[in-house]
Amino acid sequence: MEEAKTKLILTIITFMLGIFMVLEGSGITSIGTGDNNAPGPILILAGLIFVLAGIMIICGKKTKLNNFLAALMTAVMGIIGGWVSLYGDTSNFSGNGILISHITDLPLERIMFGFGSLLCFLVSAYAFNLFLKNK
Image (cartoon, rainbow, N blue to C red; front, side):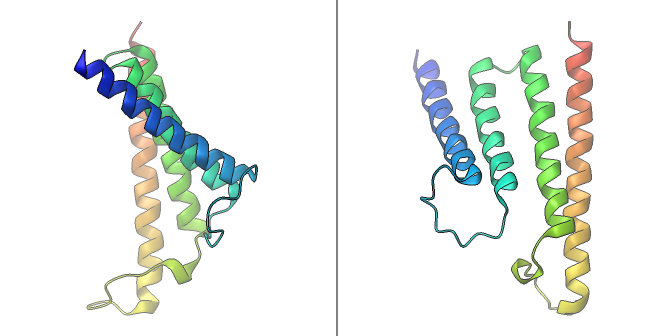
């Protein structure tokens, strides 16, 4: 009983956070500070990750729907990472320039975001493969 209550609370929290981000990204609400550098569609995608996580909590660990939602969620994470890699504002990139100068640090940060994006797409492909195999 306690586990079901915890699942419900976590689902509500993640779902509400996701809905808030979707509303902010779509311009329906403007409660946030407004000084973010991410465009609305990226905020909507980030909110979608939280909404999907909330649904996954309720679904349980070993369901076919959970595999599909995991594939979708990691694909969305890859899209966000790819956007940061290609279009992210360089003034928001900061690294520890002890061994690498700031000029060479910027391409390295973009490469790392791109690499993370590719990893997310690989995990998404694996989860989608699990979804297709489970019948």
